[in-house]
Image (cartoon, rainbow, N blue to C red; front, top):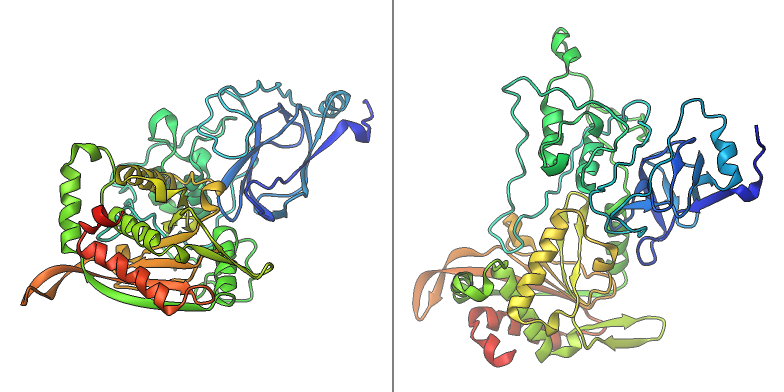
Length: 478
């Protein structure tokens, strides 16, 4: 057997797949020691505080060692896999008992870190030994909000009813099951091995419904077993065992939730928050929404109250530009932005994320409708990139989709204002001297009192309300 030298082993380090991220969790390894890898081949999937990302290896060789198991959080810059290259690759392959075919370089995808679609290559990978350990008995609690305008979030997809015998599980092969990152995360949370799930999506893609159906399908062993007392829910392997698992469930704080918690604590105890409220009659805005839906210029675009609320906020910022600023603590300066990157808070299975529309101030109403539609679709599919969540200047959070009247939102770090939109409801309202049913909502504007005083905050909130009450002001003020 040939002896390898240290120079023949390359260490692949955890990269920073976002802007300034410090760590990432290894969700899944797609290779094992002894496997042949090629330049650009995806070797693992990791989850950062902002997105699930597939990592490609940047050279050819044979996997020598995986330094961390799945589920481990690793600091950026730490080596995660060792690959023997050149002469060392041949030496590393000698002890392997089974034949490992050299994998062809994947076609149709470039060796970048973010944004891989479904692989079209026929690359084969060695199947992992054993199934994944079941996660804690806790399903994801946040569903993607189906409509950011809305009149309530869409109902979650119902699990397939096991009325008919469950379809036989797909045979386990060396191929990686095709599924999008949110579906992989759902399967991991529910303890479902994707290799056993029967896909129903196009081109053999596993959907969320397929994962739920796999959970609902009874297992043969359980069907044959006599009835007994219900078993205690399985605890996460990393969870402490010094508590009663029948009465408590412990969920590790990591990923998006960990980053969100740190950011919110930092914001709440750094920027002095002030929140102001206004209740406004938006009946004319609702009528305008219906008119725009019939306009040929908006065919195929997302038209809803949020579109006009976003435009109203952009108009208010144009009239009061000092609201669009940030506080530079190190330089002791107020930085007024001459552009608006409009953030839209969205609830996803991975947690709350706030992607933003770049240069939203320069977009026409149809362009803004297109940008909002793309933002929502991308968030639903779990494809929001880290770059899309960087550089926001002001944010809208729509708590009304959950039937909530209003709230006191916390600022995103680096921003000076955030607008919360409550539920739009028919309420008795005095209109032209008579009490009539009108569409009414409550707006709440939180702002950083270091750089936004009460007068400026009040003007911005009043302008937003005025536009929504009389949307014709969009023409004269925009």
